[in-house]
Amino acid sequence: MDVAIANTGAVAAAVARMEVDVGLVEGPCHEPDVVAQAWREEELVIVCAPSHPLLGGDPARRLNVAALRQAQWLLREPGSGTREAVEQALQPHLHQLEEGLHFGGTEAIKQAAVEGLGLTCLSLFAVQDLVALGRLVRVQTTLPRLARRFWLLHHRRKQFSKSLAGFVDFCRYRPCMTASDRFELFSFWRSSATYRVRVAFNLKGLARRETNVDIDAGEQHGEAFRRVNPLGGIPALIDHEPGESALPMTQSLAILEFLDETHPLPPLLPADPHGRARVRSIAQMLTADTHPLITPRVRRYLTTTGGFDADAWRAWQIQWFGAGLRAVEAHLAGEAATGRFCHGDQPTQADICLASLFTVMRVFKIAFDDIPTCTRIMAECEQLEAFAAADPMRQAGAPR
Ligand SMILES: N[C@@H](CCC(=O)N[C@@H](CS)C(=O)NCC(=O)O)C(=O)O
Image (cartoon, rainbow, N blue to C red; front, side):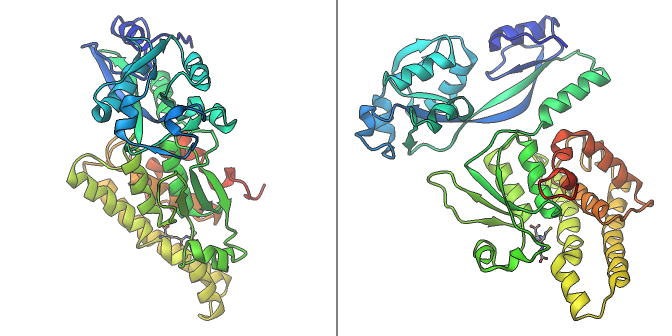
């Protein structure tokens, strides 16, 4: 594979001339014969030196629109895709940016900001090193969250070979490996509900840090965790983003919807209401009607109070996993909306929930041979690194 690096305009032009198979760009593409598929989303942050006069000696000061309009902005050169993306993010709020200086690269802008020459708006990923060192501060503002999109470009007549299609899948669904201070996920290696959230983070290229709650040892019922989730279940997610409420979010599907609303790409729900209802219905058949019956708290009750021994518990698991999956199979096998995945050819909430049941069944060594569509779709999911990387056996704490 050959990789060439150029700015957005040059990449789009190379795709339009079919000189390259695909292009990955951060700015808008203006080539008529090029199809732009939404790829990743990246958070943009405003940063400056801690001593910048607009902060008045208080790095936590929140700047309003009027203050931001007065600022001198450090920008990329005109024609750069990054500059266009920053202008698109800021101009709806500030209308016009007071250009202080412009530079041909991000590193030069960062150094100029450290020297106090102005404010700049760059990707969080690009500035987190200097923010961690205290040489830049993230400016708190009254603006909403800023983001830019990356795009995958291909010529509209491009024939995709199997390996090229595999590469595009890899790009779209590769998990993000960076550490995050923003999202704290309470998790356990085997938990299928946590798996759903892991896959969603991976699909969206978002980082998280995980705090282990050992549900085999009963930590979910301890006083500390009950303050996070009074129901004593994982996952729970805390968004530590400054300015956001730090209340823990619980319920994997609610967390999936939150991630989809705050980080829309790639979407986990179809665009049309009927499609969304179908996907949510499949997801809830698995997570509301099936999974709760086989949780540790149910096992504990049945084995301590209900007179179940190990065989009765296993028969119970097989009964309820089987009932849920056969019902989902009836939908998937009989409905035209089923495609490569549960709904069309992109993974959705429904696939995440389906795969979450398969992964926990594997841990318990349970399999069914009468759900061929579910099994085929699970194999499709596992082709994507976002799912594979969330597998229980690849998590810290899994038996080796
Ligand atoms: N409906 C919840 C399920 C939460 C749940 O039951 N999680 C399991 C792990 S997969 C748990 O923490 N169980 C603890 C217990 O049953 O004691 C969700 O989707 O988040």
